[in-house]
Image (cartoon, rainbow, N blue to C red; front, top):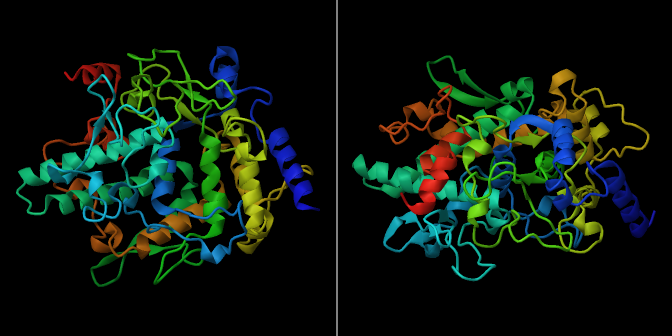
Length: 474
């Protein structure tokens, strides 16, 4: 089969089998309550929608492939990570205060620079212009400005660091910047493993992947039950089975549209994540521009933070159907606009093994794919999650997907000499003086340290009243 014929085959498969509502644009779905409700009922999961974009934020922390295999054929062993593939928030801290001083406040170099939404007191990422409609954010990873929601997660981490600096100073700690950075990094590592991954992977695999064990001489240390799947000693790397297939499960979580906040957009009004169908929506959720007050997130609509009524909004299920918005990535037509095509084509360009072959390698019973289904690893992992029994279907990854995802994250944490797993194996957020210094940011319902803890620590608005107050600076 020629490359042209292969591309046509993959595009036809993506369009016919991997789009939730063929023939509908993102804007049409956002403005059609009946269709939108039907799609949410069919494809909605129990996972709060905020975790979709936290997964994207984490991806930007651990992977940065500077050369696309869709442009030229890459050596899978030569994928270049521009930064460290560790859970160390280098997408937040960049290369540090000396190499990237423009990320930091000139009047207080321990803190990040913070911007404002025009005409309000709402916070935004710092930008190279306050007037230009495409002003770029001054942050450690530009990808964290590519949509309004991940942009505000980046903002949450900047503000959380600044709050921790203030607490460190009150505690009399000499190097407040380093104390804040360590606490925020370790809290982030805790949340990635104990909150995010615990939600999106199979319990049995997650419990196997990292275990705190006694050594027999009174000590404890972390060990991996999946070191035969992924391990590194000297230089961390991203397995292509993870970066090109398994971790791309997050694409299936993306919804066409979201409600953002009550004061400025209103209840029941949905903003498309982006609408690149030719009639550009000026207030959709696309990024790489100053935040709009209409797109400001009140986080009880995205995370379980004393949420009321139909909130928080839910992510889509992990399944083989992607939101229509992901078939309109850019204005105009063409195969490259369809994300499912991109992912399938990318897997082939890296010569990834089939899902069936990977399952057999680990003695897992392969799925019985339908005759018209492609045995591509990415599609196979989505299909595995979709086919879980009963009410588990689409709620988290299946065994094969969970093994790949948990083995990589567990391996990165154990291989990082600066992770809390190596520096302080028995550390928990409850032990950290900066996190419990009279301003406890645990989840108010069950006392857990979750993604909501970062939001509470940052001071970003949790509910509509918070949005209104912060808009006016009160």
